[in-house]
Length: 287
Ligand SMILES: Nc1ncnc2c1ncn2[C@@H]1O[C@H](COP(=O)(O)OP(=O)(O)O)[C@@H](O)[C@H]1O
Ligand SMILES: [Mg+2]
Image (tube, rainbow, N blue to C red):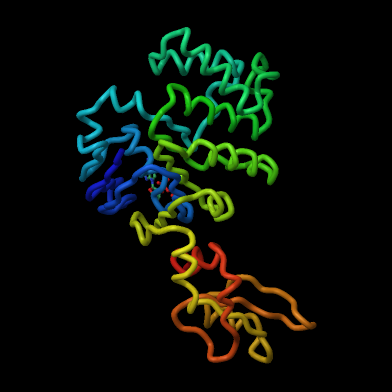
């Protein structure tokens, strides 16, 4: 199973939202990391053929998804970033409606919906209207919807947006449990959403892919790019002007900073055993 983007480009008037992206996805969870406006949703909307591309190809098992047509939709599950249209439906009605759109036979839909409601912890509230659901419950219904038809390609755009920490963890664990035999693309601008569950991380900046690798390799790649040091007489403000400053913290009554970049101060210490994906984010995607 391969999903391949070749020179994929999308422009809106003069703005290039996606700029000649080349990448091949295979089985596993890909965390797609990038600031707001980096082009994550644009990439996902092209993958789901919700918007026309400007240039390039999207190949699923070697054939362009435009040629797959309906057959590609059948292997695809999509959870969009923008929602809120189905407030008047109950979870169960909504899932049957979506199953119908996906042309899933009634009997099979019934089995799948029961199972999905159970695994997302919504069986008890299946007859409640979505309008009365909490943010986390809504996200879970949308995730359940994306999994109807047992899709081999699952595209999730900011699935934990607006959730509290407990709900984030629940959604994250659930996504993690799905990865076998599928390509899962999970877009977020929040590092902690994908740090523990991604097989690979794809970093996007201004419509371009600036790196793809395992979380461990990415963390290794910034080992000599991160230092900690006390601000001392220089002061925090000047530190921030000179360097890319991550965390600011107090140690022994002094203000310390974590700085990230190619140019680092001579002072300070490297922290090779305490690197995180936050450092990776700051190094590759920070301003
Ligand atoms: N329908 C649209 N019309 C014009 N510009 C758009 C449209 N959709 C997105 N953009 C622009 O494309 C860029 C990428 O946006 P998007 O893909 O939504 O980024 P992300 O999902 O990473 O936050 C942004 O500059 C955004 O303003
Ligand atoms: Mg987006």
